[in-house]
Length: 636
Image (tube, rainbow, N blue to C red; front, side, top):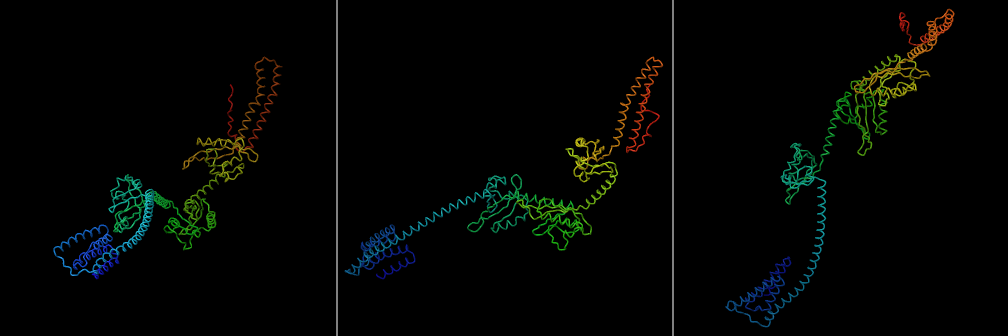
């Protein structure tokens, strides 16, 4: 019996050692109950269970197994007692072979009392340990509660942060979510705006609804590969909106994986780059136009970076020099830079102008004319122009963009024009008078395009170059009273586009000379009116006409007095009945009048002859006089 007790103790302590406390509680209770109830009877009743033994077992069960466990053991004990009592009445139990003596009774009493004491000690010790464990559990739960509260707070903050992220993403981006088959399950407001579809029209539809057809099938190979591997993908796509318009998006597609690592949906985050694409297209078109203009305009382009000392050339730049090279940055490996190709007579001046342009850092246009050697040895006239580029802040950079234009044919044409101009000037220099070609501003100011002085002694002292630069320089020699006449006539000609013809005076060396300006208008190829004309000196003509006017005045006024006297005397003689003495008297009065008239006629003829001799016309008017007729008709 003691061995059985040690077995029970060892077995249940082992269960507790391996942290099987619940199993040890049930095992210990059942074994103790069987030990006390069953084995005592089978041993012949030597330790027949009494109320104390059974009470100790029930208390043990209640303590170890709880209220329900104690109740179950108690009910089992009652059933077992009635069952064993029935067996004993029927004589089915063995007859007790051992008589009770004081020692056996002591054992039978000490066992339940000892059990109760052990349980009491265990209960106190267990309660203390339970209280300690409870305290630890309370502290652990408080710590867990704090951690939970902190976790909940963190989760709340994280949730708000995620909401903020979502809000920011919805505001700034075009977002959609599709399932693995490419059907929309979510679209944000921006997605609806750019696609011009409503959310209800998109949800459940395939993403192919937006395909524009702008991309070939191979364009999507990278996307398909990334989706199959469950990787994110970024690319640019052209989509078609509901109204048929196209828009471009920079798209990042992110796959979402489930617990098994399989994709269950895709999130697409898009950015509208339509303006960027349009701008790039405009830049591309501008570059194409620029290249086309360069190709057809016989103009070569170049770009020089002072910092890197590298020069980019266009193919046309080389072509005009007979060199076949494509666009690009070419190192000067042959020692044939643009300076080496310059004509010796142009080199110093051209380099000086270009270096000054680089050093000054100006925004002004660089412009230079020089000759460069062609591959065949000929010289090509180049018109070089350039400007310094600006950065995004408007500051001048060290990069210059320029062009070279072949103007050889133009130079030849200009040389021909200059030769023609020299010839015209040579011819017109022998013309008595000034020749002009001029335009007229609305204010009446003439812009002299061409002028030549002629061979007259009385002329402008201002150089022809100054007159060409400022048409008002011609007023330098104009008579002060006639200066307003120039602007008046010019304004009239500008408005009417009619020929110009008027006379004016100039003052040269304190002498007044008369000029006659005549010009006819003609429209050039640009539709501008240009006047071509000349001035001539009419001083001699004016003097001759003035002399004639003076003679006529003298005839009509000075001769009038003696003639009137003669008419009066002859009227008295003709009308009166005069005697010989009266006739003689009037005859004597008529003689001095006739002598006065003769004297005046002689003086008039002398003055006229002098005027005719000093004029520069050198015309013999005598041959033009009809001596058989008179300007005055015979009075009947």
